[in-house]
Image (cartoon, rainbow over all chains, first blue to last red; front, side):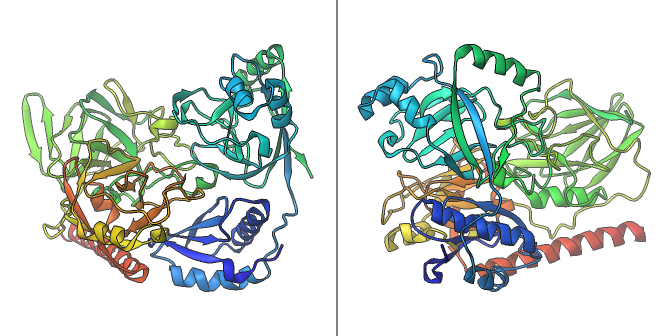
Length: 243
Length: 322
């Protein structure tokens, strides 16, 4: 996909950031453009640009107004937008084990009822899809992944939980995610992974990055417990498969 | 260990902050850092540190610290100090550096008008930090001392074993570090989610800082802002000073511990030259907003940087002249 230049908008976020927005909706094509511009700008290392943050449909450029300006960055990225193609050369693929046991899957029954599926069918659908990591946000290392099979799409819970356990695998709208820290949260919880997606002992501490591909592999409780012990000992090193 | 500051009393929230954890937002890690970075930088200049050296950020009042090193030089912005030794004590004004020796106690008093005060220490702390910063982010337990506020009994390891004697430095009286009544903002990135009336309400009203505010966001109470097309956007990046407006129409200014992304429309962003001063506002304080252009905000920031550079130069000159 090539970028239709008329749809690109530069949105100022005050004098320290600007967002390059590629469209209205969440989708793989738009995400591809965001990540392609991320790659280009990361390589270009423009003076005064301090951070780049890819999100669903825009790239956030954080800058130092003492060293550059909105106008200067706009001029520098304009030629990059022209030939932008939403394809990334290298992609990391992950298989992340998830235990869908009722002990962890606090909302599996409710999701099954609301979607007219059996719990087994919900698990089957959730784990049969390869997800794209759109962005990391909300919590350190928290991946927004999609797209969820349409039959599993539900709005967020009307009544968010005050405490969702770390490792919880959850769904809402067209997305699935993993809670990397214990936190309040309003998504529907389908299971738990023993793999720490955020670890201060790792560099970078976040396991996943935007553009990665993820599949969930159902595991039984015994396997979950075995892997948790490995993780606690710092010996659960999940490796991605390069495409 | 070269030496330490021993926390012998701590009655309010106090934690280690620098200018933030830069370069990790794409992994969902908030920047954190000092709420009032201008006061932090000036405190650092007074003790001869670089801008970004980690210091103590203290809410309402500071701790009492005992010097467990040969000597140490400190300076506070936002709260006066008392240095006590064996029955005698001497006051040290805010904005004034002071050399303190082994066994003496530094008592940080009540914050003057600001919500926060900063205590800079010459040389800073001998702590490892996390991802290039000592800033404390409590929610994920990062930085500082075990990622938490200080408590009685903590020993803060110092980078320098002693502070050589030299002329002490003082901030010129012309520097205004008072909490502001108005701050400048730039409309966007989602001002199109608000009606013309909503945007007018925003710049024509006076808001009150809510008790619910924290290092993540300053919640404001006052007239609700009218949305034009709902209050959910596809989540995108946030900036320091982003002003989010959720469904109740009440603005939230995102501060140092802001989440890196958010799903509420952002009507405007506080100019970076004014954001540090905004961090001085206490709950119940009043605040108003004036709209300016991005170019004006960038110029205001360059002007602030020039003033800080001039202050640094004049502090060095005065130290050399005496």
